[in-house]
Image (tube, rainbow, N blue to C red; front, side):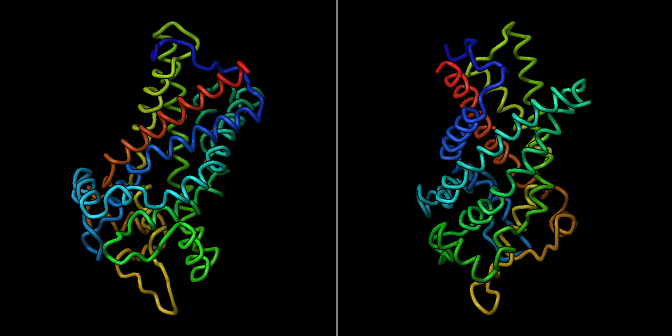
Length: 311
């Protein structure tokens, strides 16, 4: 039954139903996949040329986090994630659906579906970054700190207040350009892969609607490929967002201060100081996180839409 056909078709759905489906699926997916996101963040922040906590691989960060911090260590930043992912994921998936449908119906690109999917993915990221960037800044700064080392932030709300006080709006939106430059290509590739893989699965199974299980497999495959290809951009984006934390008149962040001026500066500095191989640091955990997140959110999104159609 899990892999039997019957998932939502591509027929247009009322906007409010699309928004509700995207909100529910996004929150549930983030809640389930947050531990993997924490591991990914800690691996990408790890740098041998800076005074940071060093992790060798995914198993190492899993073991160290569990031994030293327990389950709460994996859920650092979950407050900002849960509160923010509802509107952000709603805007992300809804804007993709609307952009895709409009491009396919009224655009000269209608004859080129892959281009439509790429463009719709870029637009979805551009719109949703307004909400995702503050969430990421707060979430990632909480994720990379360890409770046993004297945590700087006590909660998502405390992190927001501290960043606003000492770094201003610029601090809350730190890395905005790099986020667009990293997640824009990721979203474009992920949705393009997803639509193509979905079509291939439909043709292979001889059905018009994929099952929940098949949609999960398709979403996981698409996200894995997109996350691997864009990992260098994502790693620099994360480091830009967690660097230069201030808590007083002087800057006291000695660990996660990479002195990057921007995305290109970060890529160049990382390649020179840590080697080209370091640009794939955390790629495995990012692929696992992205696969699990997209499989859960996309399958949940399609399932929720189907339930909305039946109402």
